[in-house]
Length: 221
Image 1 (cartoon, rainbow, N blue to C red):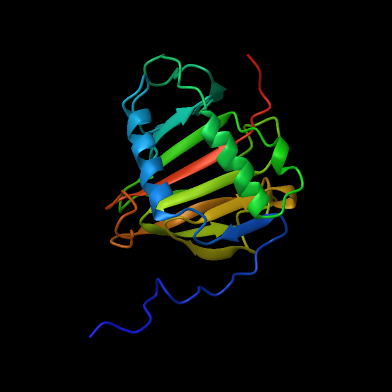
Image 2: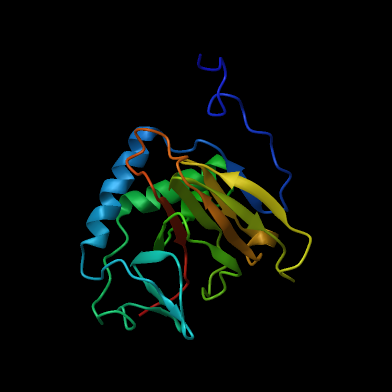
């Protein structure tokens, strides 16, 4: 017999987060998730393919495709200098509108002026993870907007000062929104592990986790 209330029905306990960090479960509907996955497939078939970024001599376990600005070990560039030298796709208008809606959902008073000019779309398989790091290659300290689709993950965010404690752990599921800005804009954060088989039916993705991070770089050509 199926349980009366599964984990997908019961509300998740709220996790107390540091100032400037916000978690909004279920921000994206299943229909929106499927549509974004279709757009991601188009991006990955574009001028710069899905690739693993090399940091030093180490290839990251996640695979990435970028929009607007291409992120690599040296920072940002318009062309994928570490892949094939081609210019990345532009950030579409709907992504800007989505970013503004995300900040509005967490009560950011500057939501209407948020104009992300870079998107990192990261694809995680069951073994992928991302160590604790800071997003500090941007000149702007506008919030980072993070959207999850597919398998859930164990996510950790700390402080801007150290990778050590204190830190806060939570589970990000398909459709969840996470925003970090203000005092948490430069906080160390990472993905400890992916939880295989947790993607909801109908999200458009199974066996992987897709994470879109929207940023304002503050850069100009």
